[in-house]
Amino acid sequence: MKKLLVANRGEIAVRIIRTAREMGLVTVAVVSEADKASLAADLADEVIVVGPAPAGLSYLNHDAVLKAALASGVDAVHPGYGFLSENAEFARKVLAAGLIWVGPSPESIELMGDKSRARRAALDAGVPTLPGTETALQDDDDLEAIAARIGYPLVVKASAGGGGRGIRLVEDSAQLRATVEIAQAEALGAFNSSDVYFEKFVTQARHVEVQILGDGETYVHLGDRDCSMQRRQQKILEEAPAPSLPDAVRERMRDSSVELARKANYVGVGTIEFLYDPASHEVAFIEMNTRIQVEHTITEAITGMDLVREQLRIAAGQKLDITQSDVHFVGHALEFRINAEDPDNNFMPSPGLIKAMTLPGGAGVRSDFGFTAGKTVAPFYDSLLGKIIVWAPTRELAIARSQRALDEAQIDGVKTTIGLLRALVALDDFAEVNHHTKYIETVLSPLGDAA
Image 1 (cartoon, one colour):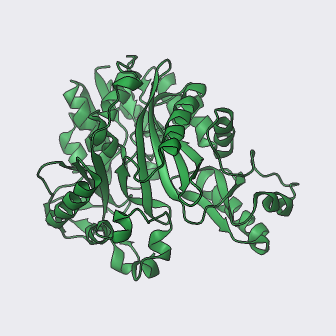
Image 2: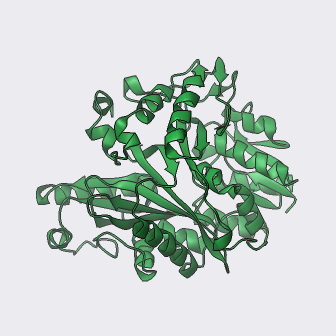
């Protein structure tokens, strides 16, 4: 591998380009017309415009991205997260063109991308799961009987869903059929598949996940993370390791995640996501993400590893040079997602020119951003500007350091979520780990009203 195409934008494109250049790789950034002057374009060795601003005509355009890869003479394609990162069809096209796909096989992507099939694979691997249907619902199924057996509340989930999308809550039988029909229509529109399944809903669950790494022979976990502070299934801040987990629960999550990766013959970086019920201390599989995660940085902070480097090494055919006993966890890390949104106006996106930007520094503070002052936030894409990552020897010091870092952060010209994050990390409930995935919507006020 000598030359790498980065098929993404924003902070993850910048993140990949930086590590690739450290490894001596020539980098090619594909950009839309709206991103020609982006930071990723500035940092890459070469830039190719693949289409107009709408993602469907540029970043999601298989033919345009593949044409750029072939024209630029790259050896490999790194899809980052989002966009084409979990698209098995595109991965096959890359491989068919004789290029290296930086990610798991198309077969692994398909298996874990179909949530009902992934659930069955998790069951087979001994991964704890919530009560639910083992296959997608069929037209002749007795929905009421199936739901009664699982118990209310439950969720209707799109089999092809992901990223918090394609999920509908059902409180009782009166809502069941109408909710299934709505979920099927939404799933068809969003994922081109109307397949849905049932899963038991935990009212006040925490969202925890395990980072795994495998080369087809050796598999290790890189610890766990907590992503419970969310708004409408979208993560806002994350931390590693997950706090206040019983040792037995943590060990079971980690060990079963490695076993799932091994049974699935998974190659590369992946994340196994779980729900944890603090009341019962039960943990259950949600899904596997077959790509680098936004929050991979906090795992890097506590392990000292570069996960993008590991992705590139494995894709190039190199074997892991570590075993589980070589993985050591030091300290505690938090990640804060800085979005161009207005929390005081129902989190409306806030595109525009960034007039000034001051990012925090000091011991244990890292800032991964896809923008600098003078860059324009386009209205066509995800609103993530970047992430502030904070490490300290203890969780208590990490929280204090985070408050200081967020106080230093200043972005002028667009509205951001910095103020919201300052408020969240200062909460007693956060310090005492009393928050859960519905905390913002159901507990906080007035934030809950806007949520």
